[in-house]
Amino acid sequence: MGYPAGGHVRADICRINISEKTVISGRTTRPDLPEPGPFMTLHTAFVLLTAVVIGLAVGGLSYLSGTPLAGAVLAGMLSTGASVPVLHHLIR
Image (cartoon, rainbow, N blue to C red; front, side, top):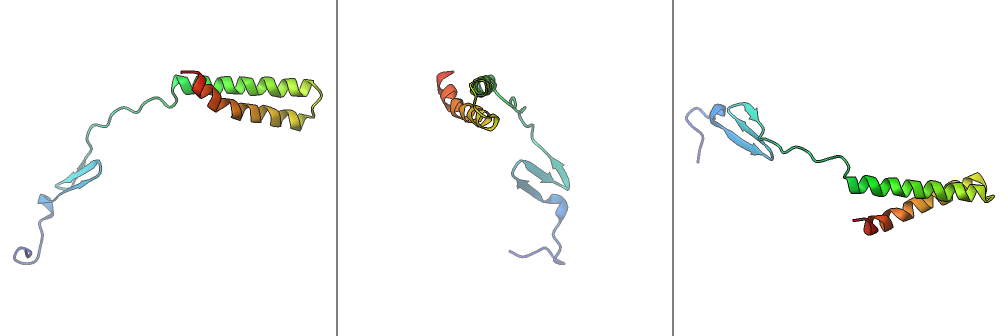
């Protein structure tokens, strides 16, 4: 189990695998990586856009009914947040 005579290890015949990289003889190679998917799926975009429209409608109607601006904004934000999980399960 020792080192070769002189105590030196030849680095040029060393092969090391580190996750997706392979180092062979001092060169780094990467296997072909698959193309990344879309940043956001159509389903996610539609759910978020619909939730924002619902929030704007609730906030606008709250403001027009006489609620102070801060209360109307809070109502719109809460309705947007609450509608996301509901829309996610309703729209498939």
